[in-house]
Image 1 (cartoon, rainbow, N blue to C red):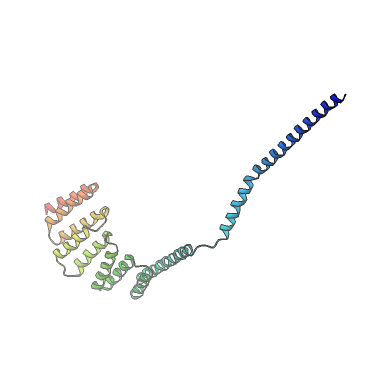
Image 2: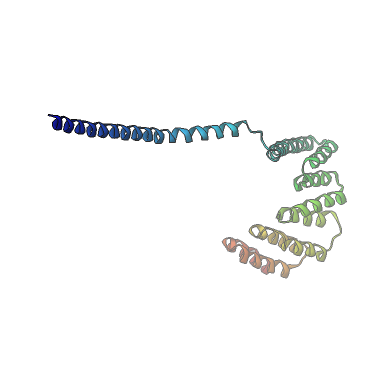
Length: 232
């Protein structure tokens, strides 16, 4: 009996140890699972904390300056447009001095060829040719690619001054190197008419021929001008 009891005691001890080991294993396993199960929420909490800190961070002086500059630009643009509107309304009412004052005011907000072109119109109507040409030259300096400015200069010099054909041709040739290629044909055909008025028929024919090269879509129309000149 003693040996049998000892045998059962040993078996009991072994079973107890196994149970304890299993229990510890389950404990640690559960603990590890808990640890990993909390990893994602912990990271999310850290991200949220960083976001909260970013929201509470003050905007940098550089960003503030950029925003203020944008607001100022919008404000200046609005004032510029308002001044132009007032200038044009005054011009329609034949209040020429008031129109000039508004155009000059617009230049305080933006140095624009539009303002100078507007003053050119005012001075032209007033018969002040020298001032009109001066304003137009300023417009051209700011926007030399705009073909109509060159056409205006040619016509006012032809009609209001004693400019020779050679003088006008120099202006035409200068403009030809600066205007937008897409509208260059307008300058060529405009000067072709001037050449005809100065009885420069060969020059005019040459210009209409050049116009055909620049804008072949109107080749038939330009050929009509060439044929007409050759018949006269």
